[in-house]
Length: 118
Image 1 (cartoon, one colour):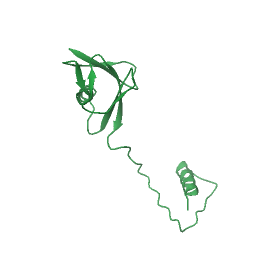
Image 2 (cartoon, rainbow, N blue to C red):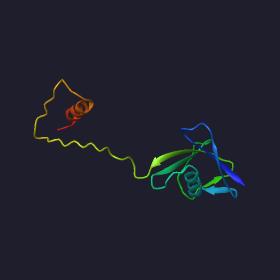
Image 3 (cartoon, rainbow, N blue to C red):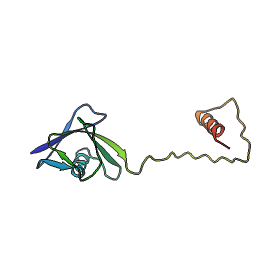
Image 4 (tube, rainbow, N blue to C red):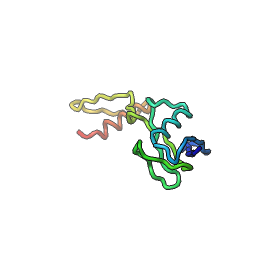
């Protein structure tokens, strides 16, 4: 049995994935890690980096040699989700600012409209 040692960047200890052969494809390694860590493929993808050389594996067909150590990071599949807050600003009306802001949202909205180019 061959193995690849992996750890998430936020963890201290390595875990092990076992397989037959001299190499494992990146795709198969991701599947095994996601299965062991109970991650859903629809929620995130995994970024795999060689722990010694810092080489990032990007091709799903790339072969990772046995006894390698890799660092794993979870990354979102669809990119970063946008926030639910949406500001609609009319550029025809003058922006009036008060010095007595009640909450952070008011202050951030003020700076957003202040710095917005006309």
